[in-house]
Image (cartoon, rainbow, N blue to C red; front, side, top):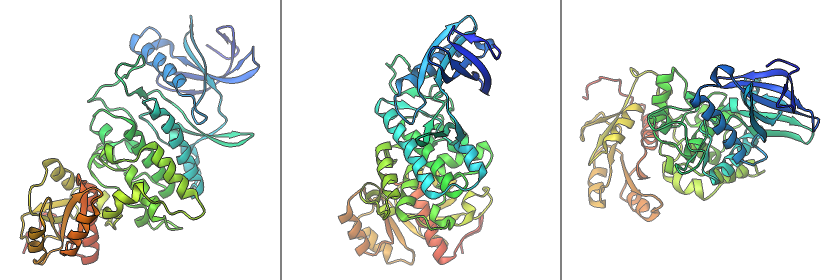
Length: 421
């Protein structure tokens, strides 16, 4: 196809405006309605490939399934001798990536953009549609007569989270899909994803808008490991001016949680961002209840450094889940034997009050765990002298932040390989 050609007797091609692995996007004019549109045409060399055709058809169906002001509208879909084509609204403006590359995004703008993305995700998740590749490149800032509109684009990786759907999914467990800098822990592990994966990717995008960088940096292999296991640096510890409110920081950290069930829903994110945009922002409830006992804590800069930097020693009194042990190691926490004098603290999961009292009588701070939301149990453990308590199931990133707070206050960082005295 070339400029001037008329596709399907309706769309006069003007000029190519983009090209990807699947096809070329043209600016075109729908002659019957005298309107400008965008037409995506499947690459000719893919036209005979069944898998490519199926994916292109699926993208069209997915995009047409979602009807929302913050999603790109689909006008038409069909096939001609030139191949499959998809007709969409033509956007005028720039991607969020281009905006970030041009300089810092004002905080209010960042929150409004993130809220718009959360709104379209709320609508998508309501019909079990998962985008799987939320990132600045797939967020379009459209310039319109009515003002700026935010559009989420490229549902090429999206799927309906329902195996009985006629749209289905194109990737299986064990196959990575997404962009490494914004990839959820479950995506990084090649596991099945759902709506919480979109929330994590949105958290990465919001983090970048607020901080000027994604939560993790590095080569792809390191990025995947950090997404899977390492806790992100608190936005408040980046000393951004003006200071990030605690509730907003906690919202972002909750979106970046390693456990999908513990991340907020899109509806909760919309509520949190709406509150953050209010003149006097004081979010309460959904985030503060769960995060109260795992407050954002200072963390040394070595957390994003190579593996040969300092680690923090933690003594454990009780049984430690094997996966939690691996996640702690990836987060820079070294588990040592109980009684080790170089340990910064004792972690006593599942310990009863008498055992905790005995541990508190020792020389090290004691951290334990409680059922999520059980503030009576939390208060009882504080009364016997525990330094802190984490909600179950214990998250490695939360425990790591607790230990880093102790490390920051005591300045007792133990180098890798150092022998306890």
